[in-house]
Image 1 (tube, one colour):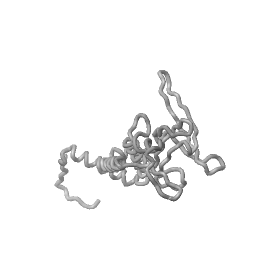
Image 2 (cartoon, one colour):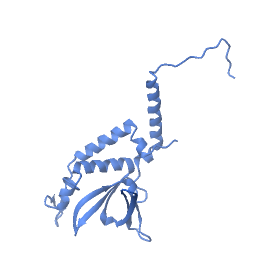
Image 3 (cartoon, one colour):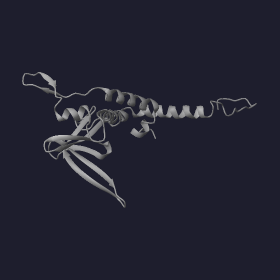
Image 4 (cartoon, one colour):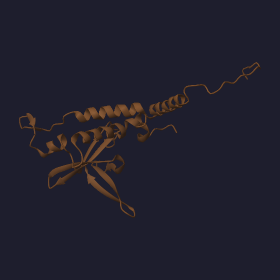
Length: 197
């Protein structure tokens, strides 16, 4: 096959290393929330609940560093990062990251308003249950890379697929050569004169 999936690409050492270094570097950057005043001035919004979410802890199980590192990984591998916005009343209380393969986005019928379909799988004792939720853009943090349609970010891996296939093949070949100790396994000899045919 001449295609490289996201999972296969992550096994190419150079791709993995680049994505890891970038994600860790981005995750270490301080993220701050500012409020803009009526006069156009801006100041840190330390007391705003959103500041705590994006700067310190976006949900109950991740630090901000882990959350933004995951965001960078998803963008570099899939071209999209999705997080469900949890509210209590009007207040945003959590940002829950979602796997890319659990979310699809399209425009609502006859509109230019995005609509997200989230598919959740829960494993029970006897079977797997699937539940689908449809939410609007006000309930989804969707960060996307370059896009042709305004909805779907382009996966860098899909864009450089052929180059990564060649890199993967080169790594496989190098591995086989080193596995055999880079030693020629045999030589063919003949006393006959060879011609071009």
